[in-house]
Image (cartoon, rainbow, N blue to C red):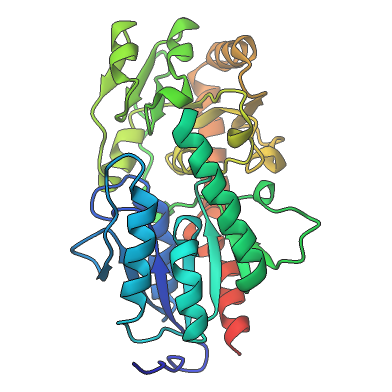
Length: 349
């Protein structure tokens, strides 16, 4: 095994270790978006994941309670067989399996945190312990962290970090407003019980849900429209059929630090957004197209949605155009990846 040299003066070979299956997992969108932008700039990305068709395959059991341990062992074995990269991006789920081997190879690594645990019960407690352990290791051995919002960083820690919010490729979104008298309300994303999306239906809102998860049955029982999940390539077309994007989250600690990709997608598609007030959005609270409501505030969310509907379609479309402009300026991957790339390059020079 040899150590690769920087490609050109500032180009890096990057190993990205993730627990996500990049061939089927909807959360691949952000990861592939970041990687694609880095590759456009001349860096090379190799993957280590439970994806047989992509890069270095590592096994992760689907049996409850065995995923983390099998994944950790697989990473340790796999890293010993690869050509050493210039730098590694290690998601928190992979830290325990990767850090010792990377240290032996003298490969610097960045802790990537894009999805803190949201599970409940025993699984949630186990994941939170693993999460805390990963950060403890990261603070001692990593060169820094890449997070979705400041919420995930303790200001008292002496650890360099960069923010990489959920971005989009705005060029693939081309809003084509349709003529209709009333706005279409959309929710696109995971329809899991932990998100408590049935509350939107119980408010009396007529929402078109698009996605999959363990709460689909309950939401359908309540009479709501639920369409099958769409591929990342289909997202721009699907969102072009809506006017107002909704994101209502429960009042739980793990949601406070969210920097939701779907809000970036809603905005890129030229939609107004009603969202729970999470840390990744609070700095944009003055934007006309964005209405933020306290986490778990059902009555506030309903009022905000009805007030926007009452403004009429012309005003909704005007604000939607502002959302599109915001997305281009703040959430296109060409903007979101800048700080991460600078951190990588500066760390290697």
